[in-house]
Amino acid sequence: MSLMFAATVLARYAAEDGVWPLALTAFLLAGAGGALLMWAGIHYDDLHTTLRSGHDVDHHRLIKAVTLAAVGITASGLVLTLWLTFL
Amino acid sequence: MAPGPFPLGRPYDRCVAASNLFRRMIPPDPSAIGTQPDYRFTLANERTFLAWIRTSLAIAAGGLGVVHLLPEFGGREVLGIGLLALSLVVAAASYRRWVMLETSMRLGETLPPSRLPALLAAATALVGVGAALLLVLDGAS
Image (cartoon, rainbow over all chains, first blue to last red; front, side, top):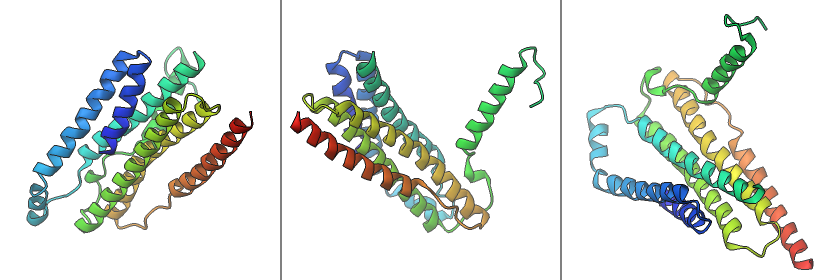
């Protein structure tokens, strides 16, 4: 939900300033946040299967994906703001 | 520093140094190290990581909101850029912190200290004081 919120604010900001590629990317990231939320809801019970079977519960790939999305949003927002402010 | 094997020794050495720095900043996958700890600790570490990410995204949304939604406010660029830079640092550092804690738990070592909470507290206080100052100056002008 935080991802969707931050990406929506970034999409709106980029769209109003006419930076369409970034607005589209932010919009897709908001969609990715929604998809992640749906996936977590649908597969919530499946997470317990891993625990019951004694397998590793380390979600390294998902953590990497979430980090990349968060860093992508914050870096895009920073670059866009710097660009619009100083150029 | 010894020159590299390429004719352009210095740029090559710089590339190697940058690559080593990048590797140190982004540690490797911890699942290949040590043994699996109690799953409750792994999941607690994951929840902490997600809390840091939520914090980072909230700061980013705040920064974008300040820049975009307060067009009449004088110090909006400074405040917004500061918040966005802070959110970027928190997002990147939270992953590094997660990997370091996971690695320590898998190796049965003492958990490493982190400067992230102190950094966030100091930066938040600084941003708060800065925002108040800018608000007063903006109102006075």
